[in-house]
Length: 182
Image (cartoon, rainbow, N blue to C red):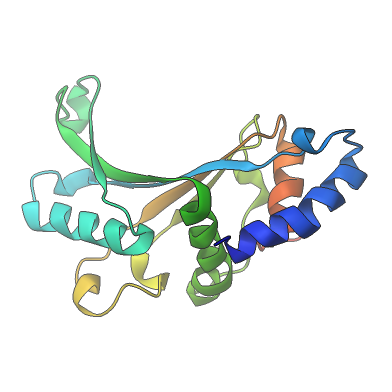
């Protein structure tokens, strides 16, 4: 069974981008490759309850098991040693990714407090987009018991776009609520 957002992508976004960007082939149209949801532990590196809460939250939000990330090098200013666990992440691809993005656009963003739209400045040079949320409470899966420890999270959308403009056009056509530039 195909996701609702994937149907929108195939039926509406691909033809619209092909026409507006002047692509000759459907394979040239950019698409989303993967979505990575990441939480850094920060000061709570040694707090086991906090780490378990973060992993439980990521599991609920994504429907997949979270992976713990380790530091690749030591940084004395942050009291980080090589091999130390510093965060958790989940990578989504395929139908699960499109289901998550549909839920993010239609359920989560409207629930974010003081939400005025996404910044169009968060694209990198290759058309990938990063979204930072200050608290995980906006997700519908998070209920009262999982909300006792509030933490932020980062969502990174990796696309096949070749530039910021292509990435912006793709996400805008998919329905991401960007702020209007002045």
